Length: 96
Image (cartoon, rainbow, N blue to C red; front, side, top):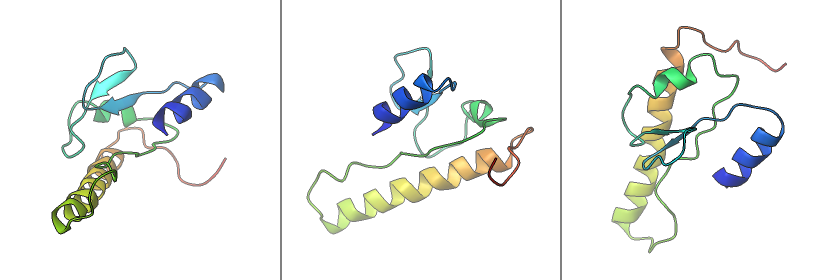
């Protein structure tokens, strides 16, 4: 899903920055999905932030896996929210 979104946004002329555990390209920054770090500077002034982080759902739905899936989404949303809240140039709310 992330690759399709990246291609569509890039084709529309947007600058795309990807937060990933294993960056390999210039447009990618390292992020563990749980902690605030230097990557937060990329969010500062952004028009939009899309969070697709989370443990894969392609696994057995054991209680432990379900807890991990939920925690990975909650933790990533929490820290992305912290980065947005701490931005020096926050995006104004509302639609354009």
